[in-house]
Length: 297
Image (cartoon, rainbow, N blue to C red; front, side, top):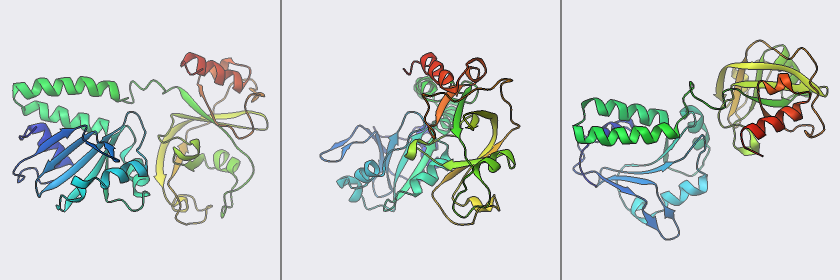
């Protein structure tokens, strides 16, 4: 498929590629190469640029191995232009995705884009596009609406990420995990998906220790950092893998004790719907009920 649609020009401009001066732009879908699998989308202009797009549902990123397979495709390696890149589209926050993808050593240029940003580009293109293209963009926007979760319609906005705290300290830190939450109203953890940690910041965090729920907090702000010491002087300044640093709102909790329950082991992290932590007798009961409601049994 060749040509110069307005939406394509805006998309290439977003990637800072020379769309205006490209003699010909070809878009190819589901291209196969033996031993390298299928690509989602490829956009190429001879001697100008070559882009391979990997599209993901939800806040999920491709593995380094998958992206490396794309880079080793014969046509990609032999293209010879200076503008060759991999583009990853997902619901992951672009800043978080950039930090994760930068950690994939040995790869070339990998550019993260969010589905929300792709939707905004499509809407902008529709304003001045010919009628035929407007109809195509309308169909695209309908499809994208099913892929994206805006803040207003997120189905998991009432989910609480529930964690265990203790009196130990991070290496090089002078403040315990419990003190970090109770005195500083902060919390931090590695950016997922490794170790089962979230890849996107949750709406609420809840903390338990002493065998019961201690507090629930709304997440007012979250930063992705590679040096927590730049924000918390109690932690030694050093470079590390990406972490989320949460800025927590005032604590709130049920007016009765909510023990952890035997089904949750010491350091297990669980997700519960907010109301269940107020209506269930145990955190484990809240967890089970939340899974049942969400069809996750």
